[in-house]
Amino acid sequence: MHKSNSSFIVASTNIIIISLAQILYWTVLEDSINMMIYQFLLFPFTLVLINIIFWFSKFKLQFYQHALFAYAAFFSSIIITFIAVLSTPAQELPPGEIVLFADVLFVVITITIQMIILLLLNSIIYVVYRLYLSRNKINI
Image (tube, rainbow, N blue to C red):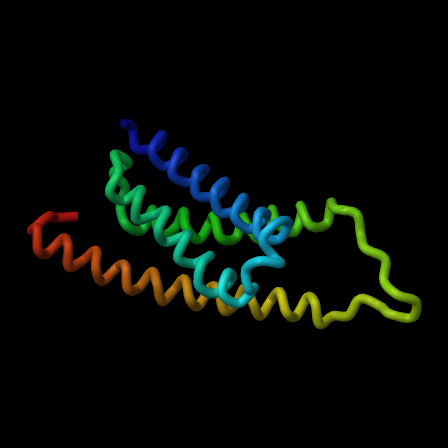
């Protein structure tokens, strides 16, 4: 398969699956799964698992391309989720209550922690990748 087609398929699949996972969580699963468990454990591992599956599939791309597409999917899911959430009808607040900056700050902190978790997971996967290459004596 041509590398540009492989790149496009891997990138678009990452973006679609991760965005749907975020939208599914915020619309259906928010009440049944704890937010901390989902956002800091399940979501990053889903992202890494998708790329490990692609790594062992017929899409032969370099490690940095898989990592790049994972981060592109992560940031795209943030944008797509905000668009989806903003397009839903707003809930009315009780009289005298206003939307605070704390909600935006909470989202920024959550995204920052997710990014740190993804960087750590990506580093671990990269070490495993290099060990796999050296053990099988494959040149990159």
